[in-house]
Amino acid sequence: MSDSFLSQEEIDALLRQEEAGEASAKQELMAEEQDALGEIGNISMGSAATALSQLINQKVTITTPKISLTNSKILSETFNIPYLLIKINFTDGVKGDNILVMQSRDSAVIADLMMGGEGKEITDELSEFSISAVAEAMNQMMGSSATSMSTMFNQRVVISPPEITPVDFSEEVGNPFQYPEDIQLVVISFNLTIGELVDSEIMQVIPIGVAREQAEFLLGTSTGGDENTDVSSEDEGTDEYQLIEEVPKGNDEEISAPPKGMPAAEQDDEQPRNLDLILDVPLRISVVLGKTKKPIKEVLNLTPGSVVELEKISNEPVDILVNGTLIAHGEVVVINENFGVRLTHIISTRERLNNLMEA
Image 1: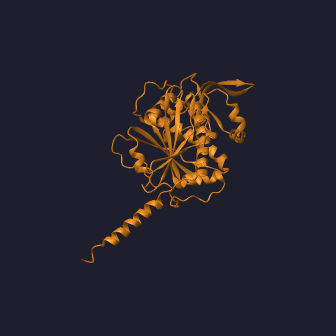
Image 2 (image 1 turned 30 degrees about the horizontal axis):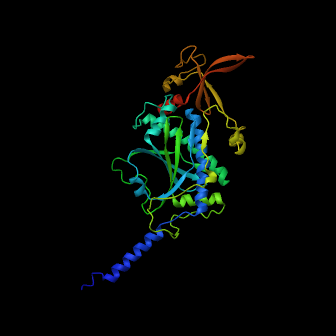
Image 3 (image 1 turned 60 degrees about the horizontal axis):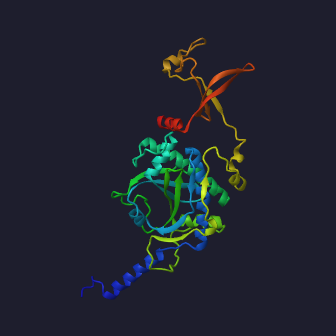
């Protein structure tokens, strides 16, 4: 037999090495890591629910998380309808990223509510405007979540603005999660309800190395996390997309965020009031009577006594800005020989989104 061919013994040896490599690549989460991730999910998504509730003026409820392990290929094959993938990158404190997975229809309900609608007559297709509204909602939710994580980990946690990618899993999409197939992913599933409009599921997808690091931060034994750490598998016969466990019954309460305007004194008493830390931070308030554009020639010809016509009619409300952001309209008044401004209209969420789109 030619030397260019492998013997049966050599083939068997290679197969055994490959099987050993696959077995070593499979990792499991220890019980304390599962509990820690469940606690992180409970608290951080509870904060996110509160933020969303305030944005859309609806009761938002998130149930106890369920944790499972899979990879990007198997995860993609489990979906068959349009979803939004919201990628969040950690820029300070915690390392890595994670992806929030939400059904497009649920996202459309949130967008419609943010724009003053009733969240009823919606479709799975999201317009660019709707995606911008969802991006604003996710930014608020994940910002609140990061603040909660900062408190839990006792260190600064900063995230970048969420990156939103619409994906229709009913079509051939390849690997939209963009994680290598040999990296195990921790999937934390929550049941999301929004008033009487949404009763659905939202998922958080985290590379196992990032998940371990977060768990270790909470446990106080962080070693930096390693996606390639070898942990032996006790049950080699289970499916790769394996339900690990539901968070212990001791944490089996619903996380419910009250609608806007309702008190949440119980939560405020137990959790640090992070807003109190910045109450003395000064903000610059500006009142803009009007604006106009002039060519350089006309600007150079301005002299004392020149009149500049503004792009605003008489008696039209003035703009009120905080740190350069439009927040209200009002009218100029005189108070004890000083000029002041009386607020006549507060900018709504929908108007703020319109301003973002026009910017």
